[in-house]
Image (cartoon, rainbow, N blue to C red; front, side, top):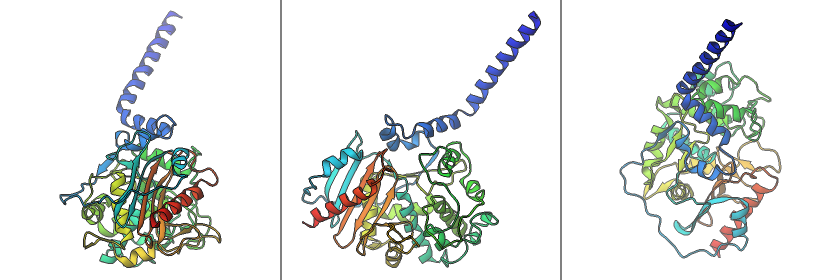
Length: 389
């Protein structure tokens, strides 16, 4: 019995040592997984959203050597009376309003600062749309009606086999994908764990096998569609998205700070939501889009692409918010009114006719509650009305 006890102690000690060795070997993956699990906690979410690089694999996108493009300051805007309450209710962390290219309102909340690189979440999709339009104009991608498998052959035989580039641009791929951010077992959260543990996003996309409808028949917000667009870009050019975006979009904008992209374990950018940029630099992008792709006397994005991508062309249901090529078009919008939108309160709202760009970042843990999205759009419209004065 005494020998058995000794063996049990030895086995227990060996298991503890093995656990410590594995824990040390995998410490980075464990740290990232713990970060994912606490990313949206009430006491951490604001800080986390300004410090994503401290917990996730990432790549800096050099802003280049161009001088910082000016953002002149205009006469202060009298914000709507309901604005302060909205800021509190929605846990807004920053807000910036441009009118005719000049800053008329800029504020930071919840301890955030102007130099914070704030996570874009799905506003990143609209950046990718702009890059996509540049590449189409250059001829790297010849037809939006080509199958995605022409450029991303690893998707052959999976759920995306048969979907066209236009289908995924409009999020009408028909691929079965659970986007419930509040369900830890949903596809979107499983994908987040792949990212945190250093897995391969391409493998995750290729591993999807189910569809619920034929491509092009129905719109359904499916974030993995945007990753497939990134696969198409890489297949068409042989280059990474951060390299292309740096050269063709970031450097020409003359930003104040170099952005960063979250990446998977092999350095592939998390294009569906991994951009981290300052509020002012989000505004520069928004103003360039408002100006039909022109910036500081230079053509960056083709004007016809902006017009097409921001028009509600996706097969959304009657009475449902409109969608273009990775841009949202709220119900009741006039031509030239559209937005990029990300979870937890990230927005770039653009009204071309009024000459207004609104950027907000947030940490709104109630963003999925009924009426919240509609209330945000109403606030943006009130701000535009105040700016038109």
